[in-house]
Image (cartoon, rainbow, N blue to C red; front, side):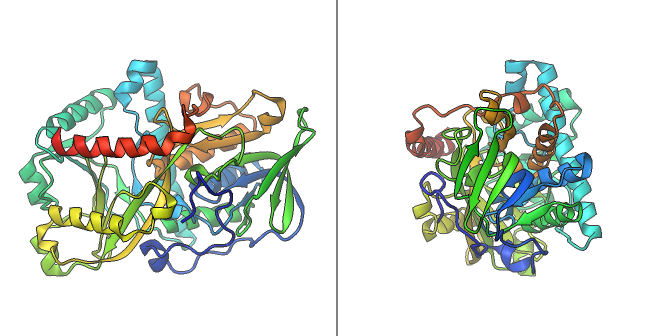
Length: 458
């Protein structure tokens, strides 16, 4: 499997992975094919995932700028088409209480407002895409965060009370019996808190909807067009031109947006080198559950579910009564397809639902999410060098980018158009570099072992 810490090209026109989403979503909407000649563009966006498509869409709709998007493989070939499809008001891995301690209440509330705006934008775009024939199948609203140990329920209750106080957030506290009787009989759930506004979607069709909206607004979406080399002309001046080499043509761009997140190739650009850690997340989807199995598990909900482990598990019941179940995957791309990781998830699923002791999985796949050292996404324009002021990026969603990436794309579009972003760390600070960056995978391995011990014994 492509590994962004080792490989310089993610492929060229590669097919989607053999995922559930790729198998049930039907045919992708039309794109503009592979670039086959040299072109000049005002704005080049690298990566046709949620961020790049949102940036292109908002540039066209709100700023009258017709950008061109260049994707190595197919639209949403990366994490945008491989994730679990959870729409949440999530801020990465950094808690709002930590934000408040570090930056104060005004900044904390500003970041919360950006996360809320992301969810509302997603809902609006889902409606627009459905009107044009692309339905990403949003399920019933509700996000359940379950305590995987009895003592973790106290932490969840404290979190719920804090969010109720901070934001007036509608958070319901559920006992172990209430979870198991009213939602699903998860034997690893010892209570939960339930939010009213999270929901699940088909993530690949969500991206296809963004693509169609962006093209209808005037953007170009070029697939099978990886950027295999990148250099500048007049690099010491404000009129520096970015030259992006693809297999069959050179793109000369005035401005470039890097929207590759966890799939950013090794050594891609100095602005992002050593500033992210790509981490594999693994997902399985089971065979369809029978009515008898659903009754035995008391699976009454289609809410999205996540637990409190350091190495989190997450799941949801899909529209065709299959279960999607996810968690951490391999550490390297070389090991990504080892069936051990899918089997491990299946074993954990069976401990939650013993009635599914004989269940099999029909689909298993993995994808790279993008971790940031400070646990926050960053949407950034550099001013360190004159020539770099026309290069922009958004990265580091920490596994929570399905909804916020759309808001990130919108803010990227504003930066490209010369509009000042809100004065928040998300938009004013560069991604911090990882210390001892060549040892990032060793640090990840150490954290996984720490997390395993913490989840089991503490």
